[in-house]
Image (cartoon, rainbow over all chains, first blue to last red; front, side):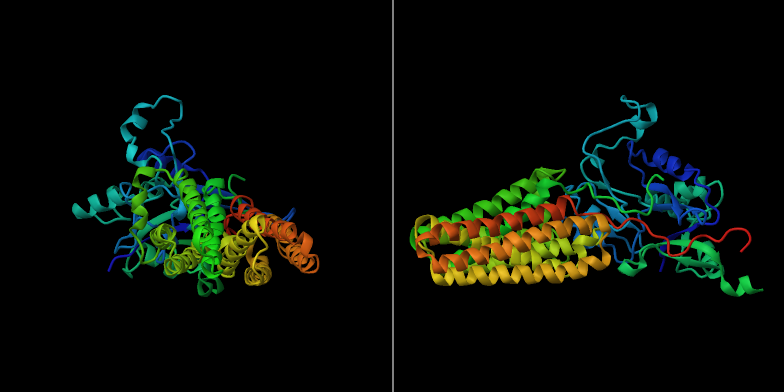
Amino acid sequence: MTRWAMVADLRRCVGCQTCTASCRQTNATPPEVQWRRVLDMEVGEYPAVKRAFVPVGCMHCDEPPCMHVCPSTATKKRADGIVTIDYDLCIGCSYCAVACPYQARYKTDRATFAYGKPTASEEQGFDPKRLAVATKCTFCVDRIDAGLAKGLKPGIDPEATPACVNSCITQTLSFGDIEDPHSNISQLLAENQTFRMHEELGTGPGFYYIWDKKVEETKT
Amino acid sequence: MSFGPKPWHQTNWDFRAAFNFIFGGAGAGLLIAAAFSGAAGNALRAEMLLGMALIGAGLISVWFEIGRPLRAMNVGFNPFTSWMTRESFAAGLVFAFGLAAAWLGSQPLALAAALAAVVFAYCQGRILQAAKGIPAWRVPALIWLIFTTALAEGAGLVVALAALFDTPARGALGYFSLALIARALAWSIYRGGAAKIVVRAALTRLERSGKILIQFGALAPLALLLAAWFAPDAARILVLLAGIAALATGWQFKFVLITRAAYNQGFALPHLPVRGTR
């Protein structure tokens, strides 16, 4: 069984926002809608201040609260773990948005473009179905499905991999099948210490953060 | 810091969503109190119709908030897990039984509508509690606070309406007093749960609102009812004021809960990245 997941190595991220730009370009999201964004966090007080850049977005949870609350069944979870939204079913009630503990969902009521009039690429990517309904990161599900149909491997072959992962200049982001013990991300998780955001809420996020090497390796 | 770890107020549900809980809860409470108070004839009809009008106003209000209002019927597609779907089903039953009860002046049908209203009010509490992204809402005790405030508001409306025309029955006043006490207890339990997980800004707003709920929504109405007991000449005006106080304080609490104290979860890092030397 396949379970697609993403890993972000917090030690590597430099906060360049290339993943954000790449996501926006690929998915033609309107201004102020960032399905993949990078938080610039400062923790602690002077002089003991630490800074971290943290990629966030839809965590494609095992138990997605957004799906459970959705009254229209627009939000669904596929067998491979990807949480999707059917724009034709969604009523735009935003219940999913308040149920998501990751602030990953957006609703845009009217068409907006970066410079007023749509640019050529905005015009090309504009989808009226996405107006006044919930939207969020899809893990670039279209790319994954199209890539799989061609026999490609998501996470390895760029054509079948989410745009944010492809664009990452520091290889912070990785994508792959967490159920495959030989996959790239399974190896990363085996070698490093990780956490998932707000794990105590029981959502089972499919997005892991690497923060250090495994303790055994650190000792040697 | 663009979006730091500090939670900020949700912007997805505004006063239109709040009105669904405000009017819907009061309407459901009114139907319950009216049906079980033994009202009959035109009084029962008027109270049933007012209760349904309030619930309808709440649903219309939230209809103005949804992005695709022409797809509103899709709200009924997920009874398996969504409390919003279940609320819509309960509302359908309230209207079906309530309209029949008002048309026929039937007390058994009014009781059936009241049972559907109980489910409706309970669903409203569950809707908020299922919103995991808002700590102030996901406190389990909120379910009973939303439910008991619906009972208190409805009972307040019933005794206030009765006081306009006559001296309210003792049974109705007793039920009203119990609903006020239940709401105060529910607030106390909810406050204890919220204090553990809600950010300071939200807790400050909740506590300010809760203080009003206790002082003007429980103590003052109970004192007014006690005064009415000893001053029969002024009883009607005192009961009227008590009913209005119970209603208004419940409404202000729900308004604050949804539009002022609904800070999101924010982001948290249980570990900071370890870079370079240790």
